[in-house]
Length: 356
Image: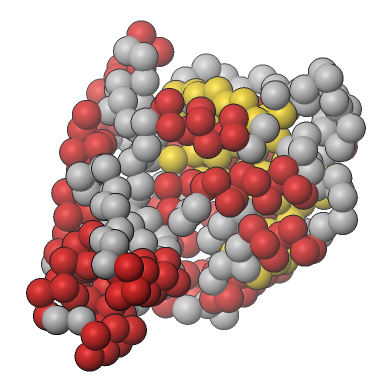
């Protein structure tokens, strides 16, 4: 990866030192939030360079020339009002504030993680401009017209239930919004897609638990198909046979509870079976709508962004070459090859959206 010309090495090093000095045990956080923070701090050099890359792309993306109102006046941190969307512990937003971005807000759907972000900000003595609990609708309610001009996120895009609704709402907040969002669900990387398809099948048919991996969460998860069967059986009661419940559960893979109930209601009234999504393994938590590392092709992303009035560009990510190990030395060499492969070796991609 090339040296970052905007987010300086000095700024990164200073923030890294602040983060390393945090006493995690003294923070008032849930065990899961602490475990997540410990993981990031353990690999802080890598994660901070990912976050710096996102901020660099923010500063390198001017607004659409046809309508700069509400966009960035120049590539200057003092012109930017930015939200770290789905922030987790809030480190990306904290880095942005440390690097001089004018206004920085932190958003999280989880009250526990939003509280953790507040605790970390206080421990690092970095004052953010606001903390917003909820999804994009709550973000919309928080801001008046055009007062927010940048949204950044890492590993959130692939979990959003309806990207169409998400980007339509962003357009309502500010049609000149710049979005910089990374996702590990790189459709061009065969090994990543294979890994995530296996995970999707596991979530769909077998469920999971905290022992599966370090960042799983604190409670066990039922197989999604079983959860859908319960939703359908409860909603349909005596109007559906066990065979129909099973058939509807299969057909509603990738549906959230409200949409499952709508589909079941239509089946009961009109005998019309819902149309199964075309992707062979994409699936979501029926209760929350959070997708299991949703895999979308680049063309599908372009369609979704375009429909909301945005254009999108795709940038390669990079592997962790920042730790002292033989593996990291190999990854240094792989990183040099990534630009030559048309995204196929990239471990993640960054999607930069702006007004068309």
